[in-house]
Image (tube, rainbow, N blue to C red; front, side, top):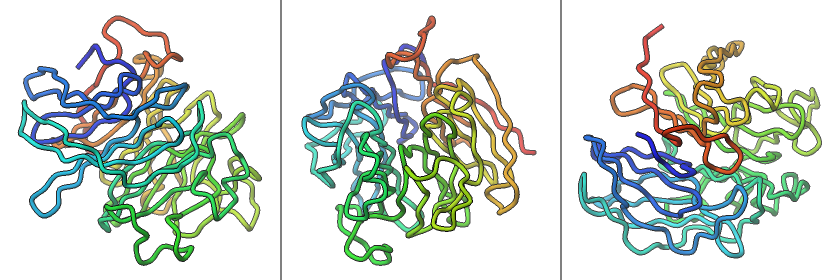
Length: 318
């Protein structure tokens, strides 16, 4: 798939693919035969800098389907859900209902990934929106990974009482993914030194802004792997078996991480360095191939003919 405009997130549905376009604030449907149409627009999106229409995720519940979207509005970042109707080739969005609002927005550090975990709860990565100290403030939802019910309520088991906060001390986390045994990993943009891959535990503190990367400070959890910020700038994250795949924006490459998912020492191998430019999202497709989404038309990349694009890579078992 080619010709996308600042794409951000990918969701497979009924053999089709839904793709969010950050600045156009619309959601495209790409059918199995490669045809493209607009499934709908998300009202209230106000793109600016890194903000706009960001993460998507799907919930199928009690015979209904809901498409969730994380986006930057006039005054905040928020999550809405919209009824998803129709079938392949005719998918359409209903009116949005607000799930969560009031998250600080900025021209950068907006986070923006959302996904349903194996526990049926909705998780969201929220950046510090440039307010560094918010990441260490338990009363703030910024600089956090959040866990909520599908309607936005606080579920049983959250570590900070009547709070959506699941983990804290994050600068700008984006990619999230679970292993088959339910372990959550998250990818995080560093500032000037280290990008991080973290194993997320409820109630844990990952150190920002006191620590960037490995700090060996007993108050904070060290990353399971770290990269120099010119090697990764990680956005999307996916799991295939016991292997993690991480999308590198500034690093312009795809990283494969082995060992971390099984509790061993993490070993990272890079692929496609510079071949596709900035890589925004990565996911395991329904046919067990790997998809990744380039992001060269977002104002920071160098678009080439056909950009941006969704790329399919066949996986070979190790």
